[in-house]
Amino acid sequence: MNYVVIDLEWNQCPYGKDKENPKLPFEILEIGAVKLNENREIIDTFSETVRPAVYKTLHYRTKEVIGERLEEFKASRPFPEVARDFLTWCGKDYMFCVWGPSDLPELQRNLLFYHIPLPFPKPLLYYDVQKLFSLEKEDGKLRRSLEFAVEYLKIEKNSPFHKAFDDTYYTSLVLQQLNWEDLKTYLSVDYFRPPTTKEEELYLKFKDYSKFVSRVYENRDRMMADRNVTQVRCFVCGRLIRRQLDWFPTSQKQFACMALCPQHGLQKGKIRVKKAPNGNVFAIRTIKIASPEQAEVIKAKNEAYKKRVKKQEAAAAFQANA
Picture (cartoon, rainbow, N blue to C red):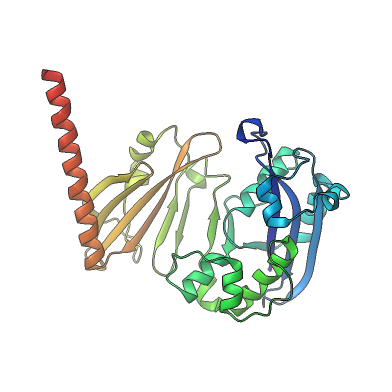
């Protein structure tokens, strides 16, 4: 299997969000890619600019990132031609690698805008090299810029950043320096096409946590009423475990819980509520071992939540009796 490292540069409506095409808020102007073999050795490259068809004037933020290159883009081929050549170049057996999660959704959105069928598997799994760098070199949560990673790893900077091909080349060099045996299990999930049926729901197990991606629901309440979403399995042994603290909201888009595995101890659960492109919602549930300190934090949040509920109930009762 090969690895295709990609980077995209795109433009957006220069006249404000209310005048943008809702089907294509970001129009791809450049595709850069580097192909690596199973040993992460560079074996081929792809680099081409795209003629703009929707937004023919550069947004000021686009100019800040890629400079005054409009004439270069106008002299290029249209997106459908470039995209079909790029997909052919990718081949059959490959996995995408990107710096951050934003490029793959926009690639798919642009393909669908031009009625090009998506040739990618569902779910689309990929490697987020930005996350992998953080997992190995930092705390796994920080998300650094590509330039920071290049400087950290003392990679020679021979080209400017923010040109699609140059960024893919730097990303490839970062990827080559990471400890692949430790990191290759940390696949990321692209959520542009979330599961639509129970059969498509996804369960992944990593070194220190598990992830479940649910199918889409009409709203958050229906989602949280599904036992398949709210059940907790020990991420080590997979057995169903009893919740000591039931799911409670920590924000409009997140829930937390705490459960106990008789064999592997306290575990913390988190459900993130994600919006699907059609306006429906789906759940991303993660389960991790909870340290004593983390358990205390969750307990404190739960107590604060219960106090807020009591206060709201008292206010509602007072209002009803007034």
